Image (tube, rainbow, N blue to C red):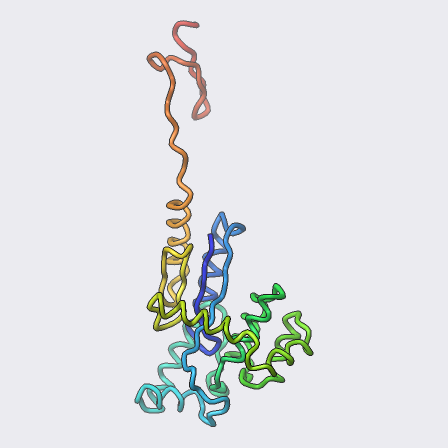
Length: 243
């Protein structure tokens, strides 16, 4: 089973959804046969590297609400984050452009470090309040994820490096009609939108597995009236004609 996850590193529900999916996978009996792949999605491709705004100011400006309304909305999201063991520090978050972070994640994927960099980028933004538009901070996170810092800086310094991979993910998202994240696609046939409850993910995993791996239907070739010797439920039956 393959799960493709479209998400952005500055999307709070993407981090929450990631945790809920992980919880569902932890209790899934076929988890060793599930591959999770992360896909790039930018909430705002035109976002500046340094807006000079707080996350509350940025949210208020984008959605036409007051600062107090933005703070209240973020507080609610923070409570959801706590329910899955995450600590979101909205007061110090630094809104930025995530294109380079996505390019770095694509490089990390080629090195087998996609899971590590994805988790580290999300944690860096929401809990450590790092600026994901800063190449030196991104290089620090790359090194912490098991990548070579020098190579990471070289990738980040070349604006074309892994840019097509990011744009390709975003192009597929458009084809699917994905307008918001997180968005989960299972086996390119089933979709789950948003940071659903772990129970929802668990139910989806079970349903897809059963549909894609149906139990074999056996043709019964037993002859006679069912007097064969057999054992079931802790007891054994003896055929009448053999007593």
